[in-house]
Image (tube, rainbow, N blue to C red):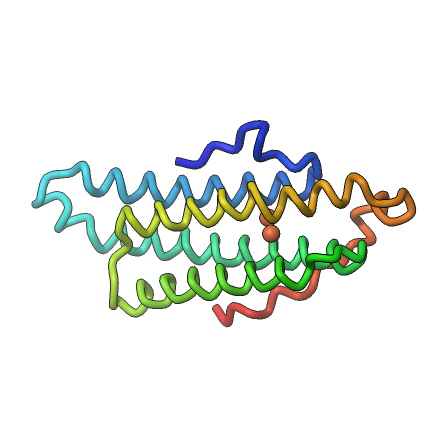
Length: 165
Ligand SMILES: [Fe+2]
Ligand SMILES: [Fe+2]
């Protein structure tokens, strides 16, 4: 279960709201799997297809949310001249590729989502937020006024077209 307390808030409302939405979706997936696992073996067998459908639906929403969020961050970095943009973007690419690999294998029926998959998902999300995203937020807040006070409406995220879903 992801809880975004004060240490993980960036103080940039648009990004904090997107992080919150990602956390909600991860938690919803976790809740769905937990509910399924609490049932008897017979009940689990009966509800497995519905559970899988729901998990797939939630993961699709999560994939889109993550992609949109990364594009928003990368758009802001580009416009503010963030010096670590390349490394941060690379982290995004690696995380998205890993997530999409998991998502596609589940959609293809090759794998079931395991609790450990969710733990890994939580770890990268929290880890990235606590290091890379907070560093970017610090830069934004310390950047010269002309750079960091760009109205968010001027920040154009790149088109989230990488998913193919
Ligand atoms: Fe982020
Ligand atoms: Fe990021």
